[in-house]
Structure formats: C-alpha cells, structure tokens
Image 1 (spheres, rainbow, N blue to C red):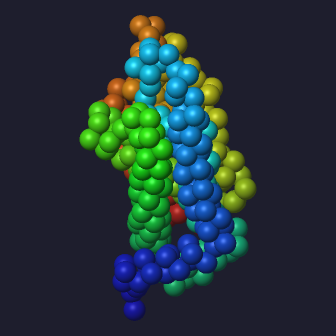
Image 2: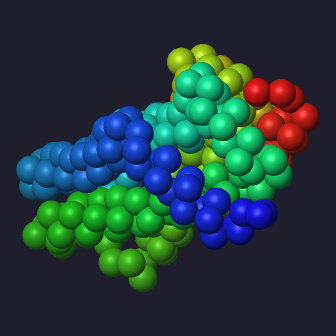
Length: 263
C-alpha cells in the first residue's frame, strides 16, 4: 500500500521532535532573539538622556529589535536544525529503513521540507514578534520606540520571521549533499555566517556575491542603511528575491541528490 503524503508528514513530524538537538536549537533561538533585543533596548534606554539631538534624530529603534549579534545565534541554530534533520538520518542509517517503507524518495524529501518549513516559520513568527514587542516596549518609556506601522517595521518582522525557514532549508539541502552531521553543520555555518564576511560591498562583483547571501539579505530587509555613493547596497526587492531563491534551490538540490544517490 502506497503511503499517503499526510502519513509522511506525520512521520517526519515525529522524527523531528524525537531529536534532542531540536529542543536545544529552538531554545537557543528563543533565548537569543529575545534576550539580545532586550539587552540592546535597555542599553539605549539607559543612555538616551545622554544622546545628543542628532543621534536621537538618527536613532533606529528597529535595530534594537533585531540586533545582529543575537540573530547570528538564531541563524546558526536554524541552519543546524535543517542539517541534522536529514544528515543525522543518513549517519544513523535510518534513511535506508525510510526508503524501504517509502520508495518514492522525492515524496520523503517533500515531507521533510514541508514539516521543517512549517515548524521554523512558526518559531520565527514567535521569535520575531516577541523581539519586536519586548524591545519597543522598553524604548517606549523614552518615547523612542516604533510601532508596527512605522516605515520598515513590518518588513523587519516579516524578514526575521522568514529568516528561520530560509536558513533551515539551506541546512537541509547541505545535509542531503554532505550526509554527515558535523560537516553539514560546518558547511551550513560557513554559507550563512562566514561567507558574508569574505565579500565586501566596495566592489561590484564582491557586492553581488555578498548581497546574494541569506544573512546579507536579512540585514538589508531589517535595516534602513545610509548608503554611501561608492557602496553597492542591495535593493529591497532584490533581497526578497534572495529569500525566495535559497530555500527553493536547497529543496530542489535535496530532492535531486536523494533521488539519484544511494543511501
């Protein structure tokens, strides 16, 4: 009897939550997102009376909601969840049992992609919303907070929400290709966190690579940067395109690799 897709979804749901690393990664995401946003907002709240008028005028409260140092942990954890979801199954040999029960390997990958994307989207929505609310509540005491209707605020919350499934699906694609947990996490981390540092935006060709990376796109979507004439800063539509391209490419890569290579 051929397995129904909803049965595959149920199986992948159980497998994802059977991994202890899933709980640790999601805890890291929640703590990092909210803690660092609160820390940034409290710092500006404390120093606000000492800020000169020009600094107050240029202050961007949305930056406190999504500080880069905190969300780098979020990126790392989300990518690791995706990598472990499939690489761990290869490493343990459980993938052979899965394919014996369900010969349609592409359906298995589709179920993994669906479950992973749904879980990380939900976690991302909670983390992004909580970070925004906590930080802006703190800043509101100084009349420095932003509302969700302010320019760039909703875009920043949506971009931060979607960052988690984008990074997780990238990790899934890498995990399907590498098939070993530790190397998959290393490669995923390199693509997400180290690659943007290797390419600056001073020159057009390096900027093109930099702007095509997921974390660089997120930084553009959550910020309202002052653009110097000699810097090739990404556009907002271009950054949304990067967000769309990476998970689609990673899912297709996983489907092709899993279908063609023997476990």
